[in-house]
Amino acid sequence: MTQARKVRGVTARQSIYGAINTSTVQIVAILALTPPDYGVFSLYYIAFAIASSVTYSTIAEAWIRSTRTGRARVAWAAYCTALITVASSAFIVTAVIGAASGAPVLGLSFGVAIFLTTYRLGARYFSVAVNHFRLVGPADVVGAVVMVLSFWGFQEIVSTLTALALAWMSSSLAAVLLSERPRIDRRFGPRRWFRAHKESISVLLVDSALSDLGSVGVPLLLAPLLGTAKFGVYRAVSSAALPVRLMLNPVRPLLGRVNIRVFSSGRTFAAASLGAAVIGGAAYLALSALAAVDWLDASVLNALASYALPVAIFVGSNFLGMLYYLVGRAHFSARRLLLYRVVQTVGALILPVGGYVLDDLSGAIWGYALVSVANAAFAAWLVRAEGQVSQVVETE
Image 1 (cartoon, rainbow, N blue to C red):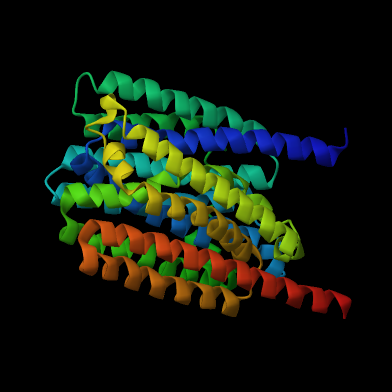
Image 2 (cartoon, one colour):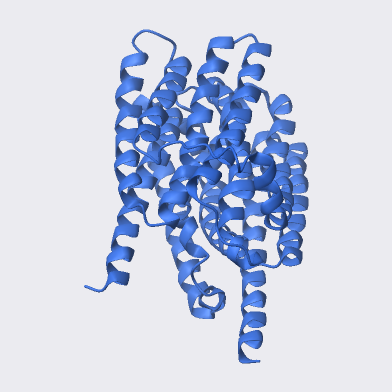
């Protein structure tokens, strides 16, 4: 077996482990929480989504793009110093929000969980990129096991929502203990990090800010309009696409290594579209079947089954769109990346809100699904265009 094939095999296994760990907290939440509790959980998870977005834009992907800007990639200690700064900021914001909302214990628990998970996210990215796989798979598996077992134990003594927060915190701590050890480089503090990676950060952070405006700003706008219970159902649509993120997020560090012309070919698009159709069809069948399961009557998942068709459309197109978007994050010029994000943000603002105005929760969900379809088509078109430009440059 060649070294390249061996690395690919190990990478595939690590992707499965990562998928298991990433999915556990969301699977437990969607199965165990009522729609109102899921609405509260979603607000905290949005805080983590923002933290992860900032981590990718200012730390992980800025670091991986260093060679594109002509710089050598810095070592783990400098990377870790910047990563801890971002994770600490996320903890402070989340804990303050929890205290201000009158739930300091819940806010503190979620704050610690978000701090640890943000650190683990950045550390895992680094480990995969430098082939330190022994610090990836074991941490993923142990984190998933601790999440399930600790939730089972905590829910016997505290409320279900608090048990989820404590279990998430315990799971992330277990994963962190088996990951890259924290190291601080006092000579390469956050200020120097941002100066050294300014060019990449400026491109990626603008893209992420526009992304968050659509993926985070719109839900926050709809939350008071829908109410906690309906908002929980609306956010569960995104959670239904969990299998998509499970498949794509773990391989995110590897997409930058592949020539963009591989993804810009018609054959790749046809294969990806077929995969999207299969995933969407599976989501529809699964939700339809869940409607008949009695023990999930109180779960937000049962409420989501009433919207099986738009959710299935969202899940399938989300796979296609996310694949091509992640390719673009690694390869697009700043101008093309900004173009994609502006179009995506405009659609994310108009369609779900417009759908809510027309038909309340059902309209908002259909609007969300249509945004996903439009994003997938536009991202694939941009990747094809970028691939053609790359081919012309190489032939010259």
